[in-house]
Length: 164
Image (tube, rainbow, N blue to C red; front, top):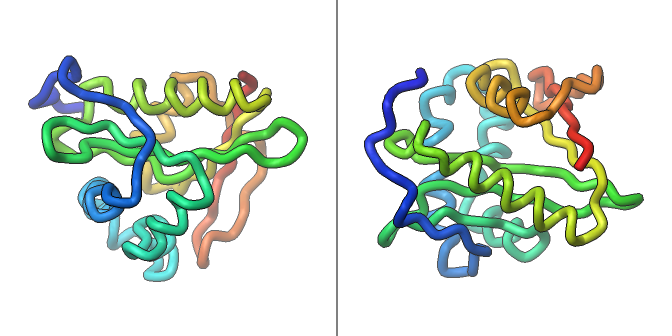
């Protein structure tokens, strides 16, 4: 799964998503999670890859970042500041042809930097077992399993955290 990237990040811009990015964010999430679709319950997949309306709600309520390359959203991540200086990440995705290019690192660093400037000292994220590559990525960037396992529409949901 760690194939050689087909693109370089030198022409990629990381910026805050705007409403007009919503269809491209939805397409990015869909393309990134499609290989694992059969490993998710239908409700879990629908929550992971939200509708256009769901993306618009996310843009309105969270900081959604996009990695823009030309006219495409090559990657995305969302984060929000919760109470007591804790942040939470959601919706990290990179288009398959951009995976391994460094976009995920750029997005993760940018959202962590944003959350830190908002007073966040600890950030959490949740993931599922089918996303082993993502789990390895998060672990290699300082995230550790907290021991919390929730229910995600019938699937185990594993919480990871990192102190900023």
